[in-house]
Image 1 (tube, rainbow, N blue to C red):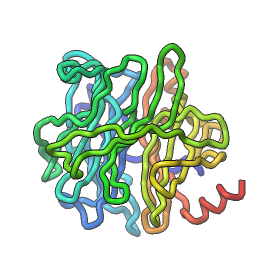
Image 2 (cartoon, rainbow, N blue to C red):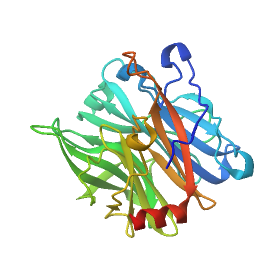
Image 3 (cartoon, rainbow, N blue to C red):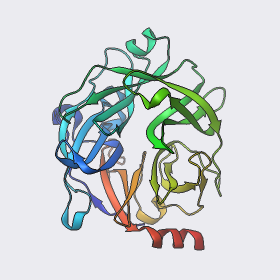
Image 4 (tube, rainbow, N blue to C red):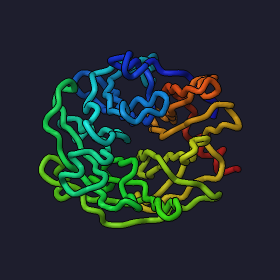
Length: 312
């Protein structure tokens, strides 16, 4: 796939966030929510500054021919910079009545007060503009292992699940695959997630499975993932939503586009078209000892894409 087009998604407080965004999570809501079909959450990361890596919620409206929006409007910052520690890895989940916005907390007071080194929290919105109280979803106590990196909440075969990237950081950094968490009665308001299994991920080539997203099309589950160096994005599929096997050819890569930092992709199929959103480092930003990022959208007919991947 080629790079596509750059989305227009200005941040609030541009003096703080510099219109910089990584880690998009984009969802299409049939029938709309709060007057809009398209919702995105992402986090700024200018100059790799973790102190401003806060979740920002956006909405958008259909572009021409019902395509996803190229312009996104910021609702606001869902959770601001903590007094200690940092935030990361935002995501969204629509439960049918409202929108959950969630994120990771790393060594913050709220995570430590619950006895965790890292934890996933969320806030619920019924109107797309205001948010309820902060809610604990899942936590990680270990300093050397993480089972909920880049959390993705979705419904699989009627069960709401949290998927997390599973990594060991000490003594050597080792990716293990995915961890899957369930929540009682699919009730995000009153319950938290419990890890039920760790599963490996199958690759045709060695790949540092790092940040990812999951979507469903025609009862098949798909996963887009980038490695920690974020020079390429790969696609995997699963019939059961548990065991994912990845094609060996990347969807998008530095070798084809000349660009880099595809740090955490998001993807879905809409009207037969596969849409892929990736953060991309701005040209010359790294060479100038700075790093700025924008969200880009690429697209291709999904059936054509699968035929091409299978033929490689």
